[in-house]
Amino acid sequence: MMLCAIACMLALSKTVVAASVDPPPPSSAYLIKDIQIFETSVPGGTGAAFLTIENRSDTNDVLTSASSPQCDHIEIHTMNTDENNVMHMRELKDGLPLPARQDTHLTPDSGPHLMLIKLHDVLKQGEQVTLTLNFKHAPPQTVTAEVSARSVKNSH
Ligand SMILES: [Cu+2]
Image (tube, rainbow, N blue to C red; front, side):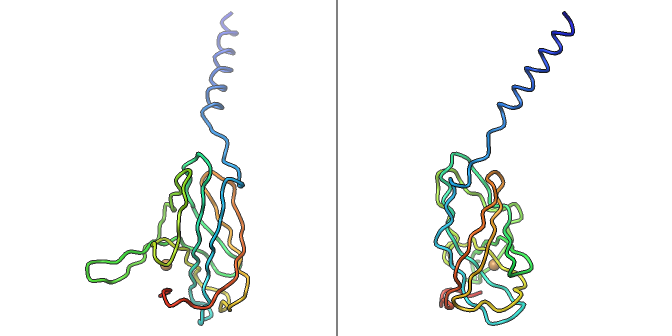
């Protein structure tokens, strides 16, 4: 009788734990679009990638990191302008929040962007760049985008 009670409690607690962990949102619930990567001129220098992440899931997710075979590593940056009109970039060590059912924009105007650190070569217009995005909840996604001519707005 006692053994059964313990076994039942164990079984019950397992069920509770399983029920409290939501399944990860599927990759198909995330749309990576409007990718913009601008050409660079210095080998070993930095590049910037801009894109929109449409999170169509019901999960508040986080872009935790990104990588590309074309650079040493990628940092998730945010940018703001101080009272003296000087631009500052800061790494988002905890990642970029991707609220459920929302588009998160990484554009030259909006602040957040991906910084490609130590490019293996210069990025030439028309070249394909591969980016892998890692999320806190959803599986990673790999996208490719074509490098475009330098934008006047891009100060990187
Ligand atoms: Cu940056």
